[in-house]
Amino acid sequence: MSDAVVALAALAQDNRLDVFRFLVQAGPQGAPAGVVAAGLDLAPNTLSFHFDRLRVAGLVTARREGRSIIYAAKYEQMNALIAFLTQNCCQGVQCTPAPVEGQARKRRKIPA
Amino acid sequence: MSDAVVALAALAQDNRLDVFRFLVQAGPQGAPAGVVAAGLDLAPNTLSFHFDRLRVAGLVTARREGRSIIYAAKYEQMNALIAFLTQNCCQGVQCTPAPVEGQARKRRKIPA
DNA sequence: CTGTTATTTCGATAATCGTTGAATTATGGA
DNA sequence: TCCATAATTCAACGATTATCGAAATAACAG
Image: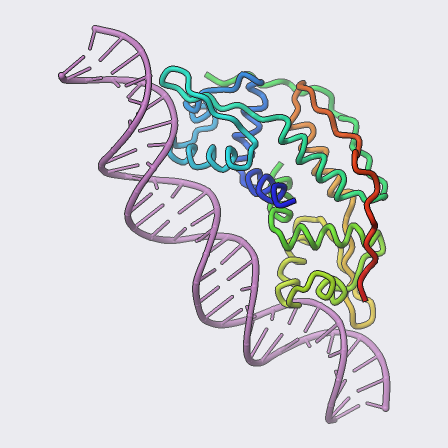
């Protein structure tokens, strides 16, 4: 219940939503903090702050690998959030989950 | 894109999420501000503040009816948000939208 | 017009947020 | 050991947020 608010708050910020989307695109193996920082042009300390929000919200995981820290999107938590919204937005009402009209987008590669 | 952030921010607050859920349960015809205030035990001015956030985010509509103002959930916008999250969380990855396990809840009536 | 009900607007307040610069910790290479 | 790289922590700041009390607006009844 209150988990949802924390998750929503974690995603309710431009940079943080970008970070999460970046990690989703990076795939299950995740990406090092530095790569995310470079890819999104964010200061490392600012990014740390946002990573922490996402981590506390259970939306990402963090693991050390050499001197990098690899962050990865936690898809299950995102699914839980979507499930919550789906159930709590559409109590008996019509609620078409929208069958992806655009089809797979251009699939941006991680920039150099 | 940025619409999503505004919508997420609108829902990322305890009282506001409660208000939206209340309106969803109230159905498409909506509920007067006073009824919501009584039902959720919120000060009318505080509630006005939250309604405005939801309205700006496009998540509710407001119409005058006599001396009451009726607020109603805008389901389409919520669906759009869920669609955005579904598409942007699950780029090619497994993303089971969870087929409503709990089934229709006790369906609380609007309190007197 | 006067009073009552329903809601919003205004001003102020404490708390939280996002960003920055400087310092710190952790890892690995020479 | 000494140095460079990767990331975090800390202290500070301006900005935004949520709430409150008081006043204002809107609609209706008498």
